[in-house]
Length: 196
Image (cartoon, rainbow, N blue to C red):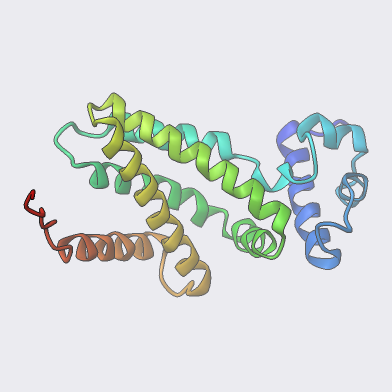
C-alpha cells in the first residue's frame, strides 16, 4: 500500500532521530533510516538529498512563515517588535513539535557536521529576515543588525525552553526579548572624541 509523502517524511524523521540517538549520526546511513521507517532507500532520497537534511525538514516553511509575519506586521511597530511577533509564530510551531524538536536539538548540538549545516540554515533565515525588514523601509545596516540580534535572541529562548520545559517557549521568548531590551537600555551613548 503506497504511503503519503507526509507520512513517509514523518516516518523517516522519527527513524533518523532514533538511529542518531542510538548509534550516532556518523554511524547511521540513509539506507538504515529508510529500513527503520519501513521504506526503501529510493523513498528516502525522494524526500531528502542526504542524511543531514532529514533533521532540517520544514526549514523553508519556517523561513517563509517568518518573512510573511514580518512583512504583514503593522507599520507602526519597531523592528524588534516585528521580529518578536514573527518569532511567536515560530514558537507555536516548535511547541507543537516538541517531541521532535528536543531530541533534534540535542543531536545537532552533539554533531559538528550538523552544527555546521544548522549555521548555514540560520544564516539563510537571518538574511531573509533582514530582506523583509528592508522591504518595510529599514535601512540595510539596521535591518541586518536587527535580524542577527533578533535571531540570536530567539535561539537563546529556544535553548532555555529545552533546558526548562516548565515554561512555554512563548514565555522564554518574552523573557529573552525583555532581557534584550534591558541590555539595550543599559547601553551608554557613544562619546565622540574631539578632533585634534
